[in-house]
Length: 100
Image (cartoon, rainbow, N blue to C red; front, top):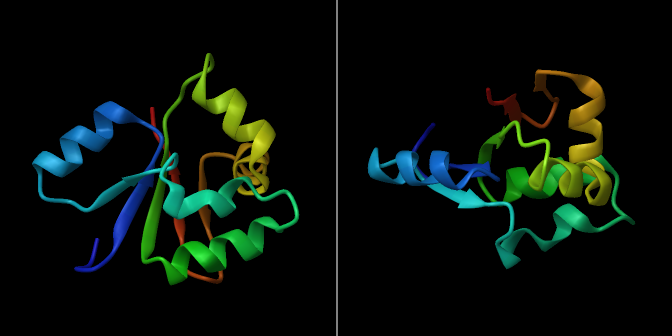
């Protein structure tokens, strides 16, 4: 990840590990990213806003109990990630990695 860019993650453990390693990371639950849950936006529009907010990677933790069901049902972007599979590289440059 380049200087000034960050990882967006829903995984508190990964978040803590990246912070300790000096990697900039932000939680999906941050008010800064309220638009992740805006149903009036397309997933492409959300990706463009993430790029403007310097998000270079989105990490999605495999959590079948809490985070994933909520994110997949309330965020147009996460719904698309769920349908698209394990790895997405978009034309706006955001890389989405679904973690193990």
